[in-house]
Image 1 (cartoon, rainbow, N blue to C red):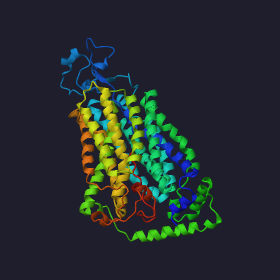
Image 2: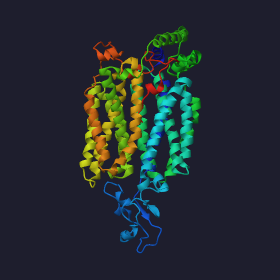
Image 3: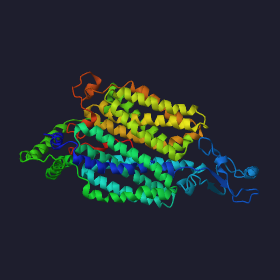
Image 4: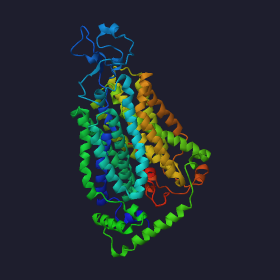
Length: 553
């Protein structure tokens, strides 16, 4: 008897699991805060340089609107002198972007940001984007580090440690004395975000029955979307970046009560020879679900543990590595396409999410709209996935890419139309991102599925790292970032045509199944395989959390 059969006996999604998902979903709101906070804390208000030397006719009050373009970008700030009559005086050999006095910023929208505090404009503008990329790199480091640690020490303890880390270093970032310290603290917050996201999802999955796992995963996505929306209102009320950073981080200390309410994973305990603890948790879950275990079931711990040991011994004989993903022609083609799809989905998702000021509308309203789009985008995939993974993937990529591409042909003055097109692009990419999570796990055969998903995660995080840097291309052409956001998904949509359909089809077990036509008749989805004893295990008998759970946040 395996653990999924135990779950069917005690209830795969009863009161115990629903309560667990409340504890899992609450941190998702704060994860969205940390992921998207740089939209406001790193915003660049209109700015001008006030020289240190006396200048006749210098205005006491600056009219920043003269330098603001219709698309919301203050592109002239680094080239136009403060006093137009002093243009000759300023021609002293200094490059256009260098300020020999001090920068002054408009406070119409923001009281302060990290840009206004540390003058991250013109010559130093790239530091702002690099800071966001370093934060994204922290997500990659956290995925690798805390995935393996969770397999060794358990999901619960890693979640608790990372929630504490997120709160402490998030608050610390609000008091950072300089940009470099702020970036270092944000990097640590990024690592903790991955630790919470991955292991919270795995913990929930390991307690949930196979039939409910897909729906349960979508529930957590909705809470992330709710955090997305809530951040718009919070940032609107708090215009100072330090106070806003403190407001999203300090409530994290309230999660201290998770020490008493967050359960361990009985599946993990069983795989690590701690069957007595596992059995106590199983009894508790059964009691809460109204399906108490009877005396006839007392032998289940022994049977369950023996099952894990037997399966573990069997899997040791298998020897597959990441090289197998590209060793044979068809497998190589499918792997490279899936890697690209992960990369481009995350690249464009964060390329749009982190640069909403480019569309010319009110930044708070745009953030609210982009957050609202998340809900229907994730919901619609529940209806399209069962019909066709392949068509759903290429269709939403095409919608997202086309909408982004069309924005470059819309004049800057028509900011509403540009924002609507960007919103449609965000809808398509969000839906596509939800689909690739399921689709990719079904493309890879069982024997190398974990390796394939693990490398896909690396490609996704690479896209996240590059997303903030993409907007440095504006120095080449203002349309370059959106051109990239349009062409990359369209290429991905075309490449998807080369992938197989997996909806309601048997899943491949071996590389030979991919290269040939011999597929076994098993129509279970990747969600049914997550945490299943059939999945390739490591020496402790558990799948790596970093391989199983690949969130795109």
